[in-house]
Image (cartoon, rainbow, N blue to C red; front, side):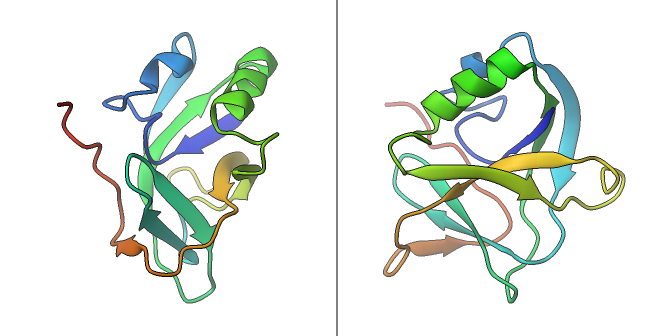
Length: 121
């Protein structure tokens, strides 16, 4: 299974340790049709036909890692939902999934293309 990460799970993110042992496949970008919002300490990805491309990282993970990541992302609590994401070349043939934010984004600052992890402290 491949996952596309765009926030705290990225290599420089505060939750990157949860991808320990996963195979890092490199930088990746989505196709058009996505929007990213600043939710404070983490970002939220949503699908939107009018949206653009989002930058992130691609990893190959095991089933066990995927289950652990669903816990980290709050899938059971209804914060995020993991589903397919469309990537651009050179990863356009990869069937990857990402975690999509299920909450409201009204009043949240939209990020253009990528999220930068805040500096600690």
